[in-house]
Image (spheres, rainbow, N blue to C red):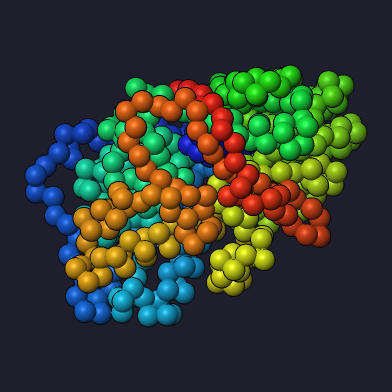
Length: 432
């Protein structure tokens, strides 16, 4: 599944869209429950007192174990190393974790516990299947830093700062009048850099899958591609027929709106059919070291996997900032792009907290730093991130992207520098 190319929220959500339909039904408390004048800030830590942060993760969600744990693990690795080096001006960081189980009810419970009981200064690297407690976080004025935009929360609420930034007003309504916007830079990249002209989009005959596929098709057509659509049955998918057809149609690229297991089966069918493509494009959530296992039955397709995103390739150990991340996470069994983004989120909080150390590390001070964030890069790990509140959505935007290709024996190999792989592309609307 392509990531970020019709907005970070849309494409991160796409990685789990099939299960979002059935599981994102947790109850949400009414807005009135959060409107009160007696809000209290977390007390500023004294002398060597710890600074408490919360991490909400759908670690045991219906999507499956370890699906959402990457950002959490990356953030914890950062804080462990930070504490070993003396913390934030002598203040150790105390991490309070909460697994919301992937439900709205569980998410609200986690938010209540961390904000009201544990009185965390901030949330960091939130990765929630159903961020039902987002409005509660916002009304409590607790900064949520570097979260993954699986839904529209980070383009809806103030005091929430997603890892990819936002240009939306964030006044309680998603995007602009309920619509989000995203660019076509990934499609432009493959057209200009690789000469691609025909793209296949594979989806299930299932509402959420079909809806996301239409978004991808819209972006491809805006960039002048011939689009080949392949819809397979959700219960009994015939990937062989889809692979044979995309071969016959001469597809240069393959995008999809299907799950990880389906992708593995599609790749296997493509190898068996002899379908050769320039790229089988996947998303940031699948930018992991588990590719050899996930695609063990499809070596040709496996080596045609490309990933696009907004953060520096976790496998690019020639970069000093990436080497620090890899050194701190060498004890983990696997590595992923989401881990690196969790590490960057924790770094972002640390920079905010350090700016407040002399006057007091409070929610208000950390939030003020985040609200002023402009072109933040986490030491070069992120494409410059900014938060603006534009009254109208941009019609065009210059957007840069990180691109990597999987190669057996080498892992994910960066394709150019993310800060110079940039395109001025149209911004297309969609309904979250």
